[in-house]
Image (cartoon, rainbow, N blue to C red; front, top):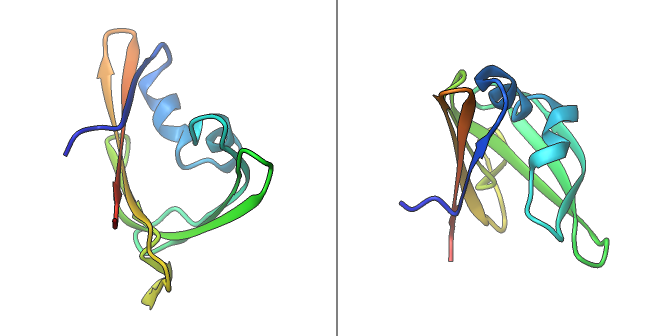
Length: 118
């Protein structure tokens, strides 16, 4: 599995990991341009639901419901849209997202893998 995105972030390891589970902070770093997060509701626990509404290149809102599959605090987060709510399969699953965080010197290596169904 090859990361689609990785970055060295010149920020405290714990603050970068916190951004992925805090709604306001998540909005800063979620998606590549021209996409941008418009809103996010996060129930950060294994089996917890999330709803992120993305704004596309033409400002069209795209709701992205999902669930958390794995949470390793400060190390890794795995979520998917294969379920809209716990135990309720999605009609159109799109991806599984894996985020990892590694402290390196004064910064944090942030990696994001996106595994698409197609």
